[in-house]
Image (cartoon, rainbow, N blue to C red; front, side, top):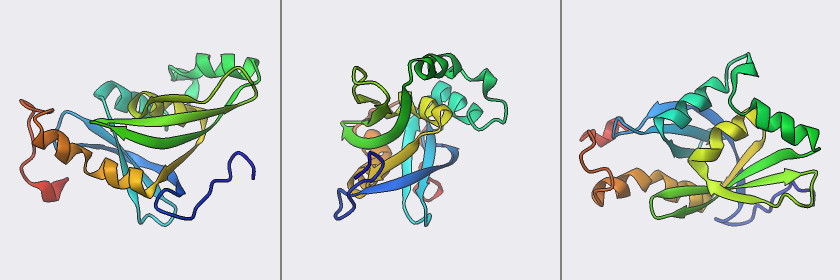
Length: 164
């Protein structure tokens, strides 16, 4: 099995996800990066801060020179290191986490990072994204949980859930 081949046999199997777009969440203050599977049947929301969402949107620009990640990627390239894939692995409380997999160095281990902090970097690096069905399901109810537990208290919440 190569490093990009992933085991797909159960609810914890890996599904390749593709960036689809950025939208405003129900709270009107948090942005969400939408990923879809190849058949566009599964939708994965990754919640972002407005700054991270703005950077993620710029990654789709044709001129990548303006990216804040260009320098870091040039350094990694000079060291022979490449970001290979981003695995959306864990939801802890109200935070989503991803594991970044690098090739080209034995010293650089896989990194577990908040998903919102990694999205724009991963988009700029052109890596592949993967998630499990369980992660997708847990991420889809995340905003409802935040609203119901007052994590977003004081934020303008859209009472029309059918618009979300």
